Length: 122
Image (cartoon, rainbow, N blue to C red; front, side):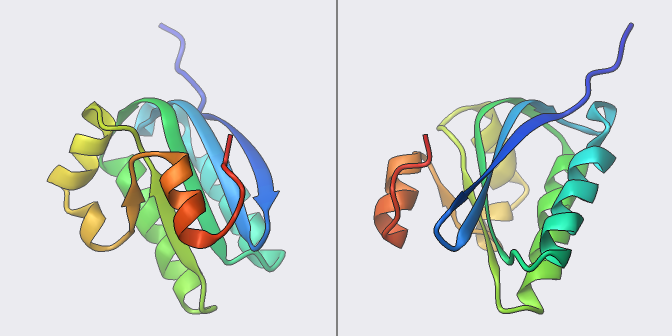
């Protein structure tokens, strides 16, 4: 069986770097690719990340660790991490693992955009 590779698109929205992830955020999805991209963006001076997970089908602890690692890296630069996740199984996994205690999670891109004074993420 062929392993999936995490797919994502990156766009700048004001001071935020929005990463739209599609598919799975799991160990089997070769998260190193996304992790290296995040590190490259941090090195380039981006310190505010929004992970749009509206098209994510599955997430595991390795995926959650990716967000915590990003939060750790950007916090030392005064940045932040935010997540947009629909009310589905992915959101439930995030909450079951208390990620919402560390990272603000929004159920719609419109809610995030309104809260931060930027245009909608889509």
